[in-house]
Figure 1 (cartoon, helix red, strand yellow):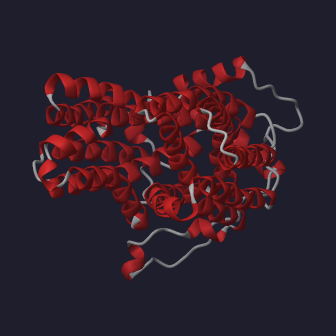
Figure 2 (cartoon, helix red, strand yellow):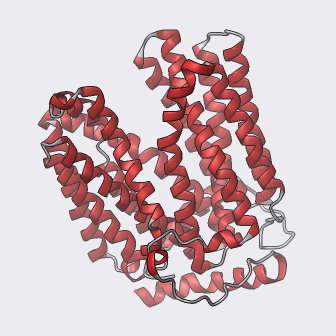
Length: 446
């Protein structure tokens, strides 16, 4: 079975490689380098930053990772200020989810049919204009929840179109052996933004006001547009033939996933970890009931910050794992480690021990993200990478939201600590069962 899968994947990959050599600017070959010694063995692997195109794209991400979080804080804050209702904040989140799902799937097909650089230019410009419109409505005092929800839906639609093209482009900018390192660099910046962005927003709102957060985000997005302008052309590798991007092409992407078990299993691994083991919906109840003696506000803040902090730490020390070649085993190990850490968190009565387990879960999540991303970029042909990233965007966005429903319901029925610990154990059992039943993931290597 494994031999059959390998030959199925290898033939289109060889054709894509030949087309890439003839038609696309290939990244410079990786040069031999001496073994890293001392602390450099543990530090982040920065080899992809030697590639000028990838370096520009990554540098722009540093700015926008923080800027996007300013808007992510400003929108719910403004909605709550207008309505005084947390329910409306939740409705706004749902308003952004549907266009994200729809346009991420379609955007993946579009990314496989056009020059990805041009698509990134259009969509990044669209996101910047949307942020500018957020600023206009806020600075003019036009207090309308409906307008905010429409702008949020528009922003998420542009993001859905943008994300598959952006991630799929990385495989054209760095060689295959550096994909894991490139994913570690990008994921670390994103997770750092999740920590620093909200903190910066909280500090800026009393000083500059809410409207200026939108304006700062819009200006930061101009850096991304500049970086995309400097990228090389990234046309489809299939030549000048016109490609479509409709329902048939989206369906072809799902058929491709079904036929390539390593891709299907990488998506399932993420769903197992996030749906069964992401307990964030229970953080408020745990902060109030289990860790209330430490101060409810302190406990809640630490619980929400712990996983991103762990992910950032994992990224900073990604040199310890980013050169591994058995990507499938790394994903399996990381998901199992996530489940064990979440189980430990659910069983902890001490806030500091609970936070320590969540930090460890964040490290495991970073490892999983790095290698799942590398598998998607290396195991799929270039003509399918956009669609694979579109599905990936939907899984990443949808999994935690499904987890919120599942854990919220289980927490009400069995208690929050039982729901969290039980979810963590389920992650371990289900992931090991998947690895045992289908060997494609555990045998996959770059």
